[in-house]
Amino acid sequence: MAQHLHCHGCGAQYERQTLQAGEWSRCSRCGTTLEIFSSMTPDSWLALLLAALIGLIFANVFPVAILGFQGLKQSAGFFDAVRITWSSGYEPVAIMTFAVGFFFPLVHLLLLLWVFVPLTFKRLPPHLGVALIWIDHLKHWCMVPVLLTGILVASVKMADLASLSPEFGFFALAFAAILLTGIGRLDSHNIYLMILDLGLPVAHQAAVKPPSPAAISRSWALLCSAVILYIPANMFPIMSIKGVTGDSSHTIMGGIIELCELGSWDIAAVVFIASMLVPVFKLVAMGALVWQAQQGHVSQLEERTRLYKFVEIIGQWSMLDVFVVILLSALVQFGSLMSIQPSAGAAAFGAVVVLTMLAAIGFDPRLAWRRAGHRSFLN
Image (cartoon, rainbow, N blue to C red):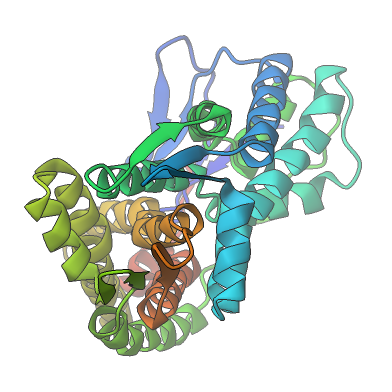
């Protein structure tokens, strides 16, 4: 029986073709990549998964950095940041940070191991369908690379105030982040094709469900909530600093201005893009995509599909400033001399990130094609 590929961008279906090295297949209607030739075997993926799991565990067992301030030293790891955020009264931020920075990546890796250990021995894993569903769900919420970038930004922020030296946990985190970036290409679609290529007796994938119109109203609700929360996220301080010279607080824009005053224009640009431009861009872009799909516009469907994919990819990088705040809170704990704590702006901004990501994940780009009169076809 012929194997079929389903385009998740526009809903078209194709008969699967055998690819050679360097080849890939794309949808002729919307340009979405359907399959890329890969020489990676299940045992190769298994080795990467085990290495990433070891790196992730080491990154959280060992301290990430040691901060020296006026003769005092403070070491901190990821769990220290979560604990201090929780004790500061911002439990939702602590839970969210723990989930996307450690728990979800850990469960994601364990599920992939559940699948690839049997595949290495050319056996089907039990409960394959359930595992693949959760692998797809968790993939969006694994933010280890964003956490690593947050550490680098926090280091620059403290450069003129104290001495910061990276520890073993930092290098383990960098190692895990690199591997997790590559592992991110594994989804249910690619794993299913890999199983077919192994010749294993896997059941045929269930028919792909048509896009639900309910996604439009759901996306509008999430986007409107994000817009409302974006106001306090920028008006309220994202962190507060207590020291012998007095207390101060910083909003997101205040932190960017401070980085510019320190001469770190490149880091300031990264934070400005991730914390200011990206959230606004996501809100505007998703609003436009949902509205055009709702109205059944037939123009620029291919461009709108590419825009949706881009919004989906950059969504998690808005979490950068939240990570910076909680990492600074863990590192800068010197009693009456100086301490940093997260503030209400961090909670509001974290909620904005989550809501916009949920809006993007819940929206189905096939709706735009379907409402414009296009249907699935087999080519």
